[in-house]
Image 1 (cartoon, rainbow, N blue to C red):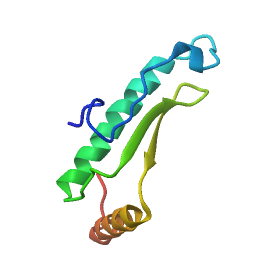
Image 2 (tube, rainbow, N blue to C red):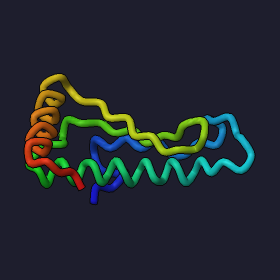
Image 3 (cartoon, rainbow, N blue to C red):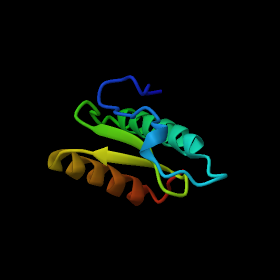
Length: 95
């Protein structure tokens, strides 16, 4: 699995001063989930033959503590990802 320390994966360290804290919201769990999801996405793209070297991921949390993954890619890479998703859609399933 892609490690947050890998090149291209820019999971920011959890900064407790970077959020407005709401009691009983587990922001760290959301950040961890986003970090894992970003690595899972990178693995899936690589297993489909996609070159992930030029992609950037950023793990964050939303105000409610849900994990968020921000993906930054070039226009060419976006076309490639779109083609990949269309190919999967033609198969009729996503698991």
